[in-house]
Length: 154
Image (cartoon, rainbow, N blue to C red):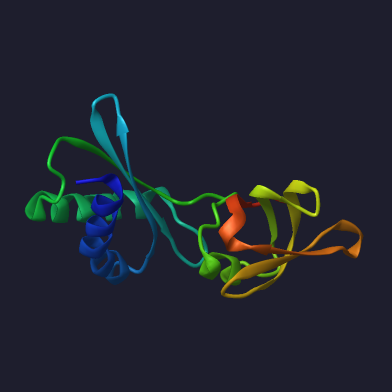
């Protein structure tokens, strides 16, 4: 089974339980690390996630994974928050953080550049519009986004 399929199965299995705990399941990531699988679960909630939230959710997820046994080998489980500079992975993420500053890297040049920093002005189903310094607007199709994160403004 490939890691994407495993991510999907784990997500389906744990999402109802995580939601019942009062937190949102942000993202599931499975990767290989030193011959073992690393299962990373990112959670979020209004007001932010605490270490206690991560510990509690980790125990609950561990119990489910032990019973359901969807992972065919030994693995390491990590539960954490997406952080202040959280990744933006899909249109819903961009919509949720409308008005915040994002840093986007594209796969192909757009207006002769591949790196953009600006406030998320609008986020539709096909593209996000950033308002950059100087009032310049740029519409970036999701299909060409390589990486996107919230920018931490300190």
